[in-house]
Image (cartoon, rainbow, N blue to C red; front, top):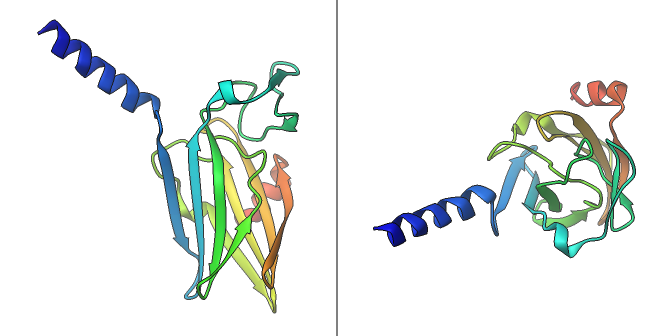
Length: 160
């Protein structure tokens, strides 16, 4: 009986910790454009981590968005936009703890289409603070144009 209880506790601990957990989200932005996001558990032992102060840290010498100085639990592994079946990758570097529930609020993501230019926006949150990202997609290419905590820009994101 003790062995069974130990096994149950271990199974629960592994599942609760998110071990090898990958979460994905697919958002249909319009009839022909879809945004796919994948977050994965962050494993600190695989990275170089430097604490700068109480709220800022670097991971692999890169600025971190999505924490208030604590170790991230997740990172945004991939982001892709599909336009009529054509897949374009979006930059995800420096985005940690992109959402804090099992599934994020789909209303935090949107797009602005201006001729051939597509702006894709996301409002991310770890539950304590929020930050925003914007990507410009043109043809088969993309570039992240904004990654910010700036509240004025974040409020603009909510005006799709």
